[in-house]
Amino acid sequence: MRKAIIAGTSIEDIINRPVRTYRTDYGDVDAAEDGSFVYILRHRRGHTEAPHLINYLANAALLETLEVEEVITTHAVGSISERLLPTSIGLVSDFIDMTYGRPLTFFDGKARPLKHTPMNDVFDDELKFQAIRASVEKNLRISPALTYITTNGPRLESKAEIRAYRSWGADVVGMTLNPEVNLIHELGIRLCSICFSINWAAGLDEEGISFIEGESRKRVINQVFDIAINALM
Ligand code: HPA
Image (cartoon, rainbow, N blue to C red):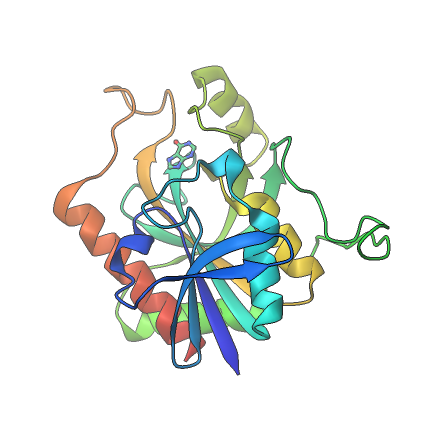
C-alpha cells in the first residue's frame, strides 16, 4: 500500500531522498519517493510557494494518481490555547476555514460531478490512533484533539483576530490545513494531520511574535517526522 507525508514548513528540510517534479492534470508537484512512501513538498523545492499560492489541487491529485491510501499532513502552527504550547506536537481533530481565493473542490460539476462532501470525519480515527501509538513508543507527548483555524496569510494575524479565534474554540492557527485536507478527504483518501507549535499567536506573548529556532526547532521537526513515519508503518 502506498502512503504519503505532506511535508510543510521545516519538515521539508529533512527529506533526504531525491526530489523530482511530477506532472498532474492540475499542475506540477515536487515530491520524493522512498519505497512505498511518497513525500510531497507542499511549498515546492526551496520553499518558494506562499500558503495562499500553493497548488493544493495538484498536490492532492498526485496522491490520487499514485494510488496513495494513507496520508499524514504536517503543519507548523502558532499556539492559541494552552492545549498546544510552543515546541509541542498535536493531532488535529477539527478545523475552522478562514481562507479565501483558494481552490474549493475537485467536484464542481465540470471536471467531475457535483458533490457536497461532509467534513465531520476528515481525520481518520485509525491513523490518529497509530500516531498516538507511535508517540507513546517514542516517549513523546502528543495533544490528541486540536481545533486548527486556517488563515489566508501570508501575513500573520492581528491581536484582535486571535482573541476572536480563541473565543470560537480554536487551539492553533496556521495557513495550510485548508483546503488541503478538504481536497484529500473528498478524494476518499484516509488522512490525519500532525501539527507542531513554533510560536504563541499574536498578542499572547509579551515579547511579540517569537518563533522557536535552533535546537528546539530541530528537535520538534525530527520528532514530528518520526511520529509520522512510524504511524504509517
Ligand atoms: N499564524 C499563522 N500561521 C502560523 C503561525 C501563526 O502565528 N505560526 C506558524 N504558522
